[in-house]
Length: 400
Image 1 (cartoon, rainbow, N blue to C red):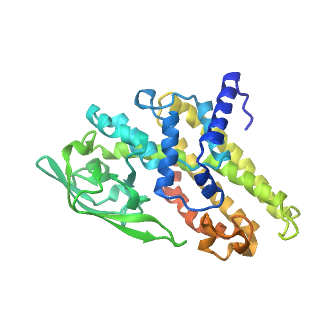
Image 2 (image 1 turned 45 degrees about the vertical axis):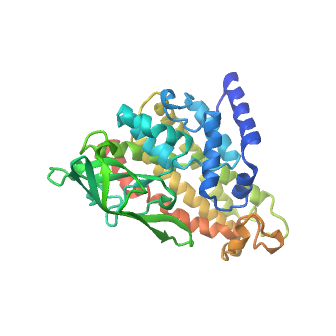
Image 3 (image 1 turned 180 degrees about the vertical axis):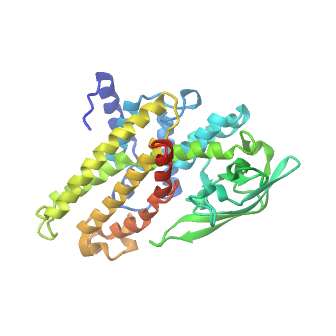
């Protein structure tokens, strides 16, 4: 997309670019460039680097530590972040529960929780999905029974990303079953992961990694002051959170970076790699994807502009989520196609900082392309499946 930046915006772009050049930790950058998985410490160090710069929470209000950036500045930052191949912000604290707390929490909750979220001193995970309750989230069964000054939680949350690293979890729980609509009996609570009765069980995904978990609650006592907003209003708060999540899931700038990497890979292939520049069908796929990504960029900018003036993302977030994840998955497929048979093997030792390049299989990240493909199949499911998002668009945009 062509944007005519003002002189002030160009200065900001230079400032952001200089920041990534001077402050991006070299060891994290090397891991990112070599497709080596990051540890919790890597994410925390990077987010603390942003925090010290005052850039940890671009979408937060200034009064709570936000940047006060315009939509164009957010656009510039996202693109420079992607070009530097810097880690994306882990969204559960800064992008999800933080906005819920500063929007619906009381003053005491804001003072208690927001500083730790902003500084990344406290690590959060999300407790929404359950066995049998994913996209149909209103069917959740984890119960929170009132007992004096506490709720007693019993149930299981699943697909809890990075739950094994988290200090706290925000949960949608059922506080009442005697309601006309299932959504009316759901509340939003915050739970310390060190509370007795909380246990975490790993789920090993298809590519062999531990990223998601089951979190079990067995008679877990949660103080009543950890209830956000009103009892029974959690569905409303949870929907706002999901709208923010879906907007970030689109990953437009990251997809642009990956597309440029793919184009450079094809352009710079040598005699040891099969050239795809003469493959008309493959180049057509790239051209079509580039056009669709450009169109999605316009939609993201409109949504950013709305968020900047205090509006919550609306049905546009569903559109961004659908098209963004579809584009991500098509990029995964193209990287595998470009890697050819080098996408078949996986050599774990290859993806460490001290690995010998002479022992590597394929070129660059060729042999990890299949793992990225398998792992990212979930993108069209989490945050509310794409099928559900189409229903939201049909209802709220088309009036069906």
